[in-house]
Image (cartoon, rainbow, N blue to C red; front, side, top):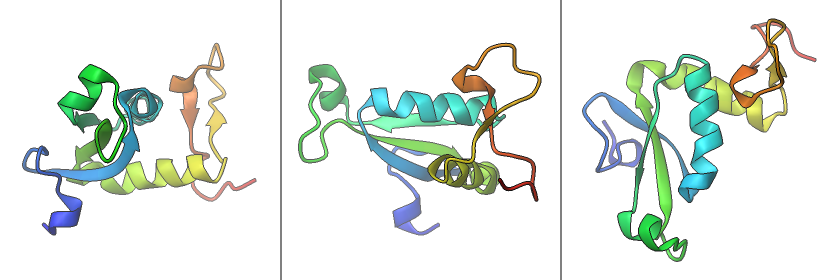
Length: 108
């Protein structure tokens, strides 16, 4: 696996999906991934999280997913960036966990 896709803290079979500044920015992404059945976790700089620093790489958080979920995770991130996420029809409340990309072939 190329080094740029495998974070030093990732377990075997995990791939780096995205890097964000701070755990607070990672949480909504983790929630959306997990709500769509994609196991995800973060790897972060401990010093940054303890002291709340986001300077020069401190506080940077890496989101990793199992390799086999990479295509789904990338599709979900692309849908989010394209503002294409929608609230599922069976959702009782408009919660983040109810966000999902539209079914394939249905673009607005």
